[in-house]
Image (cartoon, rainbow, N blue to C red; front, side):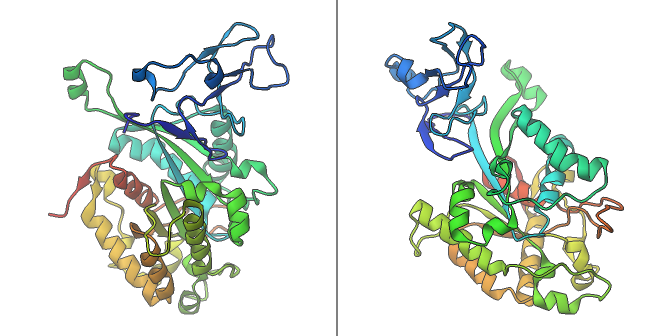
Length: 393
């Protein structure tokens, strides 16, 4: 998954595609440009590269103002500071999208914590924030409310009102080689490294295709989409569950959001209706604990995920959940949605999960009990050939 023949990179902020030789640098030395303008441009300063260096990105350059070596890279289009790993590893953009109050922020909060701990241990990998902006935003907006203060996260504001929403949480995910193998090879024990950008989308930003085109460009540049849906929005589910369950206010129909998403991807990437979209889509129904009575005690979705315990993507467990969840969605009146999904996307799968595992009271989380949160993420990693699969016996 390392660089190989890669000859371009995509800015994770404006999503402009650039050749590796097109890289900007900004000098933060006080002697240089105090107004923060790009003072050195790699493309302009570089000599014609040797043939063997065509696909290599410039890592540093000498500032033409102060003479210091500059290593801070910026996008030559939007001038946002780029991850220091840009162009060196495979870039994966994972978009978490869904209607308002589907639980997207809580999902990201719990998922990233799971990757840092349980998934990291089970799959011999390490998740590391790429910069201070990611560290501070995850801690302040996601981790502290849920894990320290036991409070629900405030509703994500529209990217039109809050520019931070359009900025991703960017991490490197490093997979380590077996220590015995690395000793034999006499090298470091890093086998694969990918850069992952997580986006949290405000539900209201999915209510218009024009808005999506403006503030959610990452959707049509995604390496994978986790489409988070609330089963409590389905009319049949609302009518069938116990009256003790507090129902959220009904908002956008799930097939409407899905149609806009598929249309946006097709138009942006020039994909005709007779071609399938190749971005893998994980359709994850959140708050599955709220509809437990509709699943039945023996339902496979109620059992713990087997992937982390095995340290591999367990195909049998995945297929059982996928088939069961798809059947439930059809029973719950989602036939049109399932038809749209199969007509538009080449690779897709169904999941059932809960990020909190409880119904918060007065914005307080009584007891955090996440369940199967990792399944969609591990499926995407498997689709990108980053983790091993345990096939059905």
